[in-house]
Length: 296
Image (cartoon, rainbow, N blue to C red; front, side, top):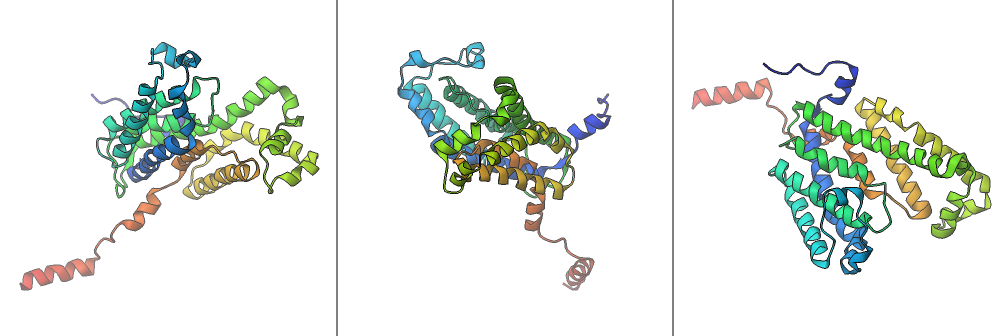
């Protein structure tokens, strides 16, 4: 006897089917980003291979799982195993086995990265994406079949993207209080990392304070993005979010690349792959082909 289908508005939202082509495209983007992340954006993690092991203070998950202390050998093995597994997973072969390997190796890479006193919040949505991609199985670029498993996976990433913003706002108030939006956080950021595109804002203190209030308000309102349904609205949302991160990078040279990659999961990639499909033969073409066969 089969299990009953999910019912209710919440279940319909979580398991709203999406075409497998969307997964095929996003999977390639996510897995090919990993070598970029390892060798460029987190190149500093390799430095942990040469620091005294006494400096290692593992995160809670590292303590619970008794993960190895990152010696030089451990760091190099994890690095190259992660890169090779990601490149193999990007081919779409053995999606469950290779996808699970990528998730576990990237998780260990993050433990190595964040166990020395600095924990970034911009990687949780990307890590969730790596966790759910193997649950979907095989997906091809031209496969437009709807899948509830794919819908659930993309919903999980979407929620985590939202929580990244919402919990960032909560952390601001938790640790900085309601004085945070009237403080000098952005002023210090521009003074330390400003560019010609943002230096002029130091002459307008009220503008930076207004920007802090706007940032906090938008982050607290971030759950509203879960109401976005149509493809056009999803594209607009992604352009808005990526535009915000590009603006921040232009002003203070800070960008959350893994989070931006996770944002790309919101896009209806199947609309792009549909253009690659060959048009189905028309009835006239089929009739002509049948007549030609009969004549031969």
